[in-house]
Length: 153
Image 1 (spheres, one colour):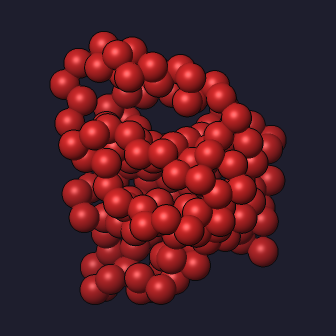
Image 2 (tube, one colour):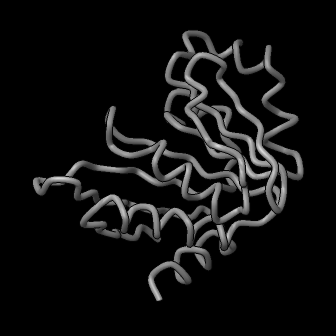
């Protein structure tokens, strides 16, 4: 199921992220794609708030991953600068992807072959209107489809 959600401003984007975070569970993976400046990090920060992360969430562009503590461990990946898929093996990505935390992966299409089949994909598009974003959300399992159903209620 592919669902389209329009957020007219940054506040609505933050609300969407917060709701997503509230609905996530241990072991969940959220894959974010979209153009530079589309709002992946803004959405990530809000998802983290919904997961009860109290720390300041920043983009891990130069570190690849940041780890936070909330309801569960939260692993925030930014794989924009990955040049070779082996870099993911070097950081032990499998421990995160198949662990008890929640993974949020910015630029997930860069490492699509490593992403487990069970995940939530969110593609963010800039809109013609200032600060407006269009979110195309797809769940690959019944669990993720139920997350999407809760979002649109």
